[in-house]
Structure formats: structure tokens, C-alpha cells
Length: 331
Image (cartoon, rainbow, N blue to C red; front, top):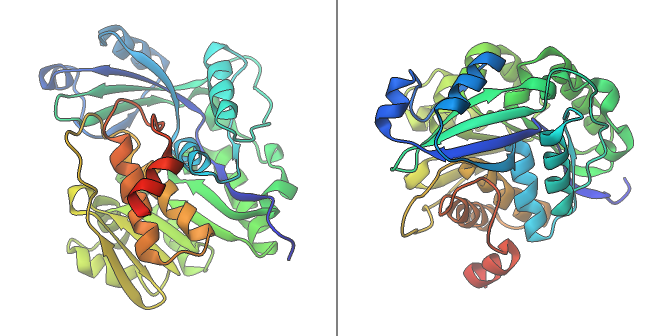
């Protein structure tokens, strides 16, 4: 097998985050589920945008955020996602390339516009997300560069993008390409609502041995396994997935791999400003260590450090030099 061209190639939503601080009362008044993610149509997106206070536009998308973290640590990465030929599409493409990530999927002409996520951040740092998927749900299998996928050590897939039909087909094709090339496939479950809709698909991928690294949080673990007890949920999956990583917010994170169990505490932080992207950056830290053959405890520690950086400010893209931060924290 040839040496990989990329450490990680990811397929995910190409989204621009529109973020604004909000009161708990406003979240309740707008009928949103605090801390959750809801899909909205174009009209709902406009209504919510009109209800927002002064906002910041920051390129996002779960898998793209993970790659931004990986790139910031020094990894070689590529992104596969769909934008429209419009202003937000240009913003997304510029931002992802500016942090050193290869992105060569052509912009899509016409409607719908580039995806956007309207994020209301309450004073406790919780983010309530309302996502208009727009162009991102029309990523075709034809956009895949099989040579690039086969030339990446890890193919990283975003669960959110499993919902629309075209990207789902594209991801299934990418899994086949990666496996044929002898590469690893990592999958992030993204949200419990995705599992409610496609849990059978995910369980089938796991049972068929197609997932090498699975990322989940506590809620997603319960939704996938049907187990309310955390330890029971781990037990239900640990022998089915070579590497299982589960984040637990302030309780840290765990990894089950090779018949062993590892855990790390959450990294101390003065104040949680915005939890957007915490899981994305945790995955970035873990994967960076993993592709370099580091021990699971060190991979978990990298994840905790990256997640702590991201929740210390607004937005899901790092504002600190992660390579230097890792060097300081890890020695």
C-alpha cells in the first residue's frame, strides 16, 4: 500500500454558521429546543434570521470544523462538500482553503443557495442550531475523487450528511473506495435525531465491519444502542468497533479499543462561551494523535485540549495556534 497523500479526507456539510447571542426567553419564544439542532426550510431560516440580534458569519459544518482543527495541528487534509455559486459559497470555499485544506468540488449553479446554520447562543454557552441545508444536500457521488479517497489514511464521514439521498449514496461509495484501498473509515454520529432516522443504517455499517473509528457523545451512544446506562452502551459497542470514542462534556471522554478502556478528564477552562464545535474539535485532536500512532490516552488528551480551546470563544473554528497549544500542554 502506498503512503497516504492525506492524513484525513472528510465528507460533510458545507455550511456557513450565522451566530448570535440570545436569551433563554428568546429561544423559548421562538419554539426552539435549547441545545438541539433542527432542520429548517428557506422560509423558517429567514424568519429566524430576522429574529436574531447582531450576528457573526463563520464557516462551519461539522466535518469541515474537524479538518480545520486537524490542519491547525499540522495534518494534511482534504474536504468534500457542496456549496452553491453564491456569496456564502465563496465565503466557505475561501475559508477552508485559507487554513490549508484542499477543496476542489465545483460550486453548484442555481437554487438552492449555500447551506447556513442559524445558531442562538444562550448565556450558559449552549448553542441552539437551526440548519437550512440548501446546496449541501445535493452533493453527488460524481463529485468524489476516488484517487484522493484511496490516498487518505482516514476517510471521515459526518452523520448529519447521511440524511439527504445524494450525499448518502456518495458516502457509501466513498466507504467502498476507502476499504478497497485498505484505508480506515471514521464516522461521527452527529446527533440523536440522525440516529432516530438512520440508526438501522449505522448499525448495519458497524455490523458489517465498515466503521473503524466511531465518535459519539453520551446521548448518541444511548440512541444507537438503546441502552440508558452509559457503561451498558459502551459494552454493547466496544467489541463491534475497533476504536470507540465517546465524549461526556464536563465529565471528559473515553475510548474503548483493543480490549482496553481509556479515559481522560475535561480540560480545565475559565468560562464556557460557546459549545459549538466542541465534539468536532475533540475528533480533530483524537484523529491527529491516531494517525501519528500515539497511545489512546494521548489521543484523548489532544481531543480534550482542542475542545477546550473551541468552547472558550464564539465559533467552531480555532482561534489559537493549535500546534503550539498542543506543544505547551503535552510537552
